[in-house]
Image (tube, rainbow, N blue to C red):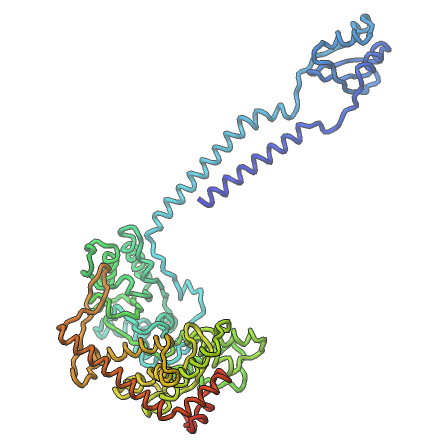
Length: 612
């Protein structure tokens, strides 16, 4: 429709141009000399006129010396009568040659073309373009079922080549995928041993851990085409389109001797079937069924491998995960300390870093960050340095970017009143002092009462090393730290504010998990409550069903309240015992607004531990 409108506008402009040219040519190119009828009468009496041609009301007068002039006669009277009235001698008038001519000019010639032939040509052009667009629309209708997969690699590389060296960390995952690379490079070696080449490889990991990047690295290492598609691209309004695109995608892969089909966000089409209220002919289920059929349709000696990525393996249909389909599952964990340092080094390439930058310190301050988070951190640091008109990225920008990624940008317009600033200082000081007083709590890295994101202030505490297990004692210490702000407000101001609402929400959630999921309640013991079951209107929608009695629910609520009360009492005991230190810390916070770890430990009388 866009091209059709463009063509119609072009035809209309052409029509206007022709009309303008016609009007131009309709005018005489030269202006003839004109005389009055009285002068004409005198010249006729003087026998100077050879011929008079009448063209409508216009007169073309030719003198005996060859000169030609023009004149206008009266429209009501004939030329002879007009001349006689002006005193022309009748005898001389009879000897004068008078001729009648039709009025002919360029406009008269072009009028039939403009008003008859040109409209026919215009409508012919219009219908021609309309049928042309219709033919293009029919072609697009056939292309509607074509796969939208992007081709990278051997013949369709449009992005820079990615290898395993460009993917930091993920040592075990790369070792597992190195076997897939060997399958693709030397398939005959395995076929001769009677081994079957794996059909599918499922990459499972948290968002931002590098699943797509790792899949591209496998294709680059093997030197095979890489067909990349997203799970959402197969889902359309029209029934059958998704399955047709799956057939087209696998058909394109089978035409190559070796290739990798990569489906990102597999859970978009691979959710468990049979749940919800939709029927078996639902479009998503048809697409999933077609994927299952196509994966079974690979021949034994086919070197095409299907790779998929998801961060929700729990919602996938069991048929996808059975042997012969996605029978290889590769877990991608969040990077540890050394991996984070290596990722930061990779993403610092191309950025001018100050010689004093310590990426190790940044890696220590970013536990739980994914590769994408670290890339964003380095980018934010570069943006902050450019905003300050610096020529290099310093440690200051890197540390500030951590806070920005975690909590959001500073809200400098959010100015607290003197009373609110004092409450916030005691609140954050309470968190920090309880954390520093409990041996199993993580050390405090930074305290600030500057608003960021939705937080009026924050206390940044980070573990000294990466942890994969957590004890009950450590959970209780975390709960006490969360209660520190609440208790500080209550002790100092004899009142509480809404500033502790998020702390209480997080603390309640942790206490609930301690009782219902981790089996850490002394009274209830090692048992879990609540099973994940598929229910709801949408297919694959999961939720928790209560599989226990009302009496047990009451007991669970009592245990949750007991754990929270224990944490509150622990925090209050610490703060009452160290009230002078809390006052000192709050005063310094009000004055400086931000306190780093070294200064904080001097205030509370501790020495900084090396390597912590």
